[in-house]
Image (cartoon, rainbow, N blue to C red; front, side, top):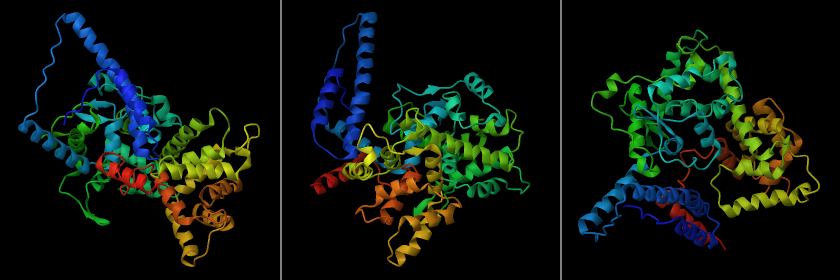
Length: 472
């Protein structure tokens, strides 16, 4: 069904203000308002300016033909809505996010830039754009020439590259998995890539494992188990272009061409920024474990630095309230509950109440240590079940001991106390275990876990209505 076009930016602003006046604690509802105000105004302004320029140049009168919808037109609109709903069901959370944030297209395939990747981790919506940029071979070669060698890797690699690079969907999945790996899992990940066991990973080994990683997302779900589809790994990347084409109506962005007959047989993987960085411009370099560990640690640190500096504003610490906001930002909790968490921290940490007295705050090292602990959340969950099975509440001392066992390191006492102030619902000094684990899993996976309810479409609307009915 065609979307009505607003004739002026004033209409968008008026609608936005009208919606904004309605009291609602639903996050989905608020996102609709934000999108209307954020995208409606600039798009309508550009459209109005473009039409004015057209009329000035052509000097032709603008004719608008109004046609009464026929039964055939209504039936076609219904079929289109059903088709779009079907396509929506076939897209995973990761696919949706990749499609929305990918700003580059090369040879019919979508790519993220390094800047797109970072924004997909820290922003709820991509930057406004009219269309994707179609890269030429010359532009891509120039990008790859500017890619730094592995020895120049740092915790600012992606921030320094900005839009000068491309990241494929398989690499996007790999980078997401890196962000959730504990330090102890780096060696396991390296051994997975090192298929011949020579303690080195070459480009071909790396690509094979990436293709297997994508193949895992083509499971046919059957409870917790699944079966591989009959899609060969060497065409999965190209198939994703078809997935992107199916989802184009969700984003309104550039079209992605069909996968033509026989095309998959001759399909070759394009050199990307990540491949050139890790294996050199000729693709002949190999990775040692130390190189692999450094890259993974740098990536984790870079993303955490990006999050931390967003709230620190140049200061060496963030407040306890901002720490709570970071922990809750990727979770799908009701906005009323979100405010309850924040108010709880403000009430229980007196230093946060006054604008003249500052609390001790949370340093970046403390924040990073806590996020590395979250990467060991599965082990921590097992340890904590020992207490919950015995119906024993969890104290700060027991929390400290479980963290030490799982990670080999201790967390700062003030940091742990802040965590307890956030998740200790009744103020008895003990942790609300189930709530803590559930929210921290969402934080760890940055809202991309497959079980999460979609924040778009009919399901999100029904959830919004249910939450509002339950609210007092």
